[in-house]
Image 1 (spheres, rainbow, N blue to C red):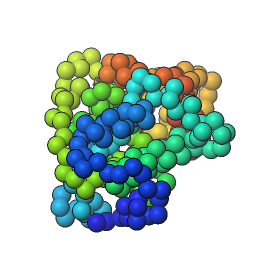
Image 2 (cartoon, rainbow, N blue to C red; image 1 turned 30 degrees about the vertical axis):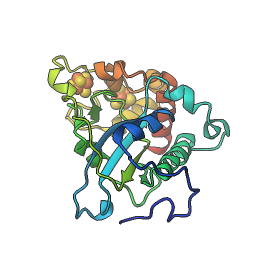
Image 3 (cartoon, protein in one colour; image 1 turned 30 degrees about the horizontal axis):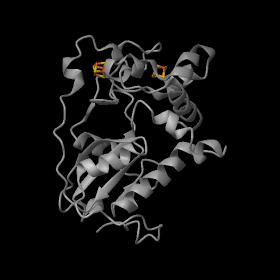
Length: 239
Ligand code: SF4
Ligand code: SF4
């Protein structure tokens, strides 16, 4: 198996691994931590960095409710940097220990894990008309707090249709005040220059207008305070 399991890595042992690990069981455990499984896939048997794993599950905020749960955490309250990444590392590692899985994170590299490609492989994320990933439930607010690679090959629920197929108006394409997506790619410099000005206050405090314009994002339940945290990190760190 590529990579070390949490036990091999010397992490705290969790409760005994349930004999019958299932998608529903992992989903319930994730939900108890204000997370949802946003998709999963089965790695190829000869896939180098996932060799020996039968299933990869991608986890992200469960809405509504994620922000209220996260802001009660010690990571949010201790006043030190990167609270959400530190929270993710603790919570995902705990879930990994419980299911004898390997956690992977979209931060903290190198090595950097191919979360974008993994998301596409779940069939639940798609490239939107503005190039950002769109998810059937989270819309353009899709984000991953980590992934669990399990040894078992779990049955995965079928993926819902791509929401963009039925979206005739495609408001994501015209919502950005500086047309940062006008060529079908994301002009990051143009966006950040706008955010640094007073006119960018709405995006900074409520989240990206293009992401908010998506009707799927609008029903996801992401609160503005969480978007503001991400926007500040994006403007400060470029990520
Ligand atoms: S606004 Fe419509 S086209 Fe754009 S990402 Fe959302 S569902 Fe897809
Ligand atoms: S954050 Fe605002 S300026 Fe940047 S891409 Fe989104 S809508 Fe455009």
